[in-house]
Amino acid sequence: MNGPLLQLDGIRAAHGGITVLHGVDLAVEEGQVVALLGPNGAGKTTLLSVAAGVHPPSAGRLLLGGRDATGIHPRALARAGVCLVPQGRGVFPNLSVRDNLRMMTFTGRTHEEIEEIAYARFPVLGTRRAQPAGTLSGGEQQMLALARGLATDPAVLLLDELSMGLAPLVVAELYELVAGIARQGVAVLVVEQFAAAVLKIADHAAVVVGGRIQWQGQPNGSLHAELSSYYLGSPI
Image (cartoon, rainbow, N blue to C red; front, side, top):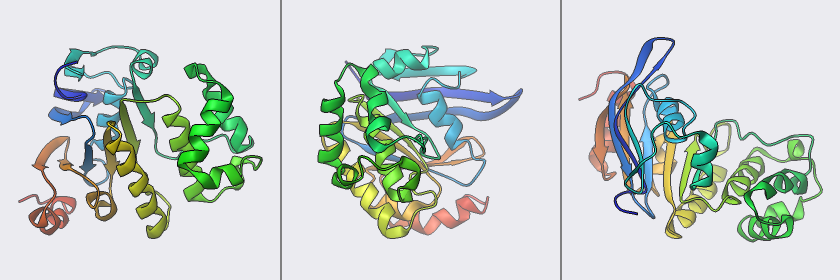
């Protein structure tokens, strides 16, 4: 494959006839963490849905490894290595940790292989394997959601609001795990409203306001200084 593992080229997208993304360009390289920041309603989750094939763009192209993947069914994108961990974790609360992981055997791996990988990366899940997922802490549920996604052996990992409802120390721990995943060669795109934790591990950041990227580049002091103005709707 040539080019970035994930590339969004001139993406426009709409909800109910109202355009919410206006020609967005964004790329994620192998082994890179890209933070997609911006206020509520900026279009971040829609952009992530386009990248996962869940929301069709009205214009522009989705490229995987330099190949046009626009319009491909989400299941086909998943088989090609694109994994979306949506907002809200999406675990099955009445099923045990083991049974939540068992549901990922459609990837072609055995249940034993999936459990081995999950417990090696998230040891706390191994100690909770018989426990209903709904009784786990918020951070442990997020770990389970990540473990399920990683069972697909993704090339591209899409994360939506990893920090939602979690304590800062738990968020910091999760983002360190995400950084480790990227170091294994995975391209990671993280949608996040609260920037502080993700910017500690991000290689690149983009700020979306009103469906347009207002700023992107390597996270630095100037971005931290300007974020409040972007979030208040008065980008510099």
